[in-house]
Image (cartoon, rainbow, N blue to C red; front, side):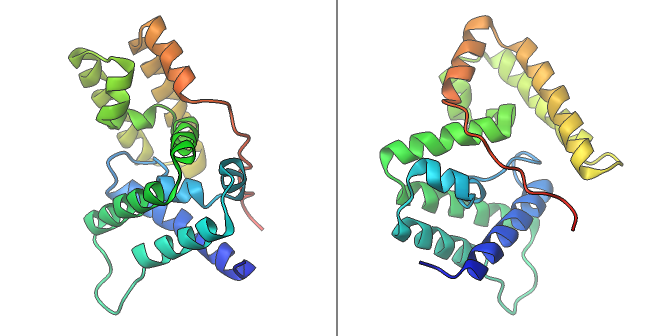
Amino acid sequence: MRPKAWRSLGLVLAGYLALVGSALAGPTPGKTPLYAIALRPEVQAALGFSAAQSSALNQVVQNAFAMGKDAPPTPDDLAARQRRADEEVLRMLGTTQRGRIREIGRQLNGFLVMDDPTERSALGLSAAQGKDIDRAIDAYGVDMRAPGLPGMRQTEARARLNRRLEKLLTPEQLRTWKRRQGVRLRIVQPRRGG
């Protein structure tokens, strides 16, 4: 069992790096990486994490984002670290756990996962739909950088993106998309403020 302080530090660090890294350099601004999703207690419970997996996850995050005495990492470096951490998390999970965390990732990230060719292929998207989705995700990125309160900006931008992308999918693709999200996991959003 790990000390509670490390868990809190890990969650804060992962959340910060997920926000900063994805906003600056990630393939899609605002997309929560799998390692950050896996750090959530309710996700670990839903996946049936063992104590060894929980400890290994904390080690993955600490190793991936260890800041040495060198210059601060570039946005590209942070994005590469996120990708490596996600790959390591997927390697440490069992087959069922990997499938479930991907479902939860689709639930939390919504259509932002459409930057992944595997997701597009699973829905059978045409080349034209793919280009339309790229444009919609690019517009979302512009919306995310617009002035305003970050939480409100993200919520409004995500709602616009979801409405736009729902119109691009055929009814069968939309059914497949909903099915690929799996059983809804209730995620407790952290409280803001003091």
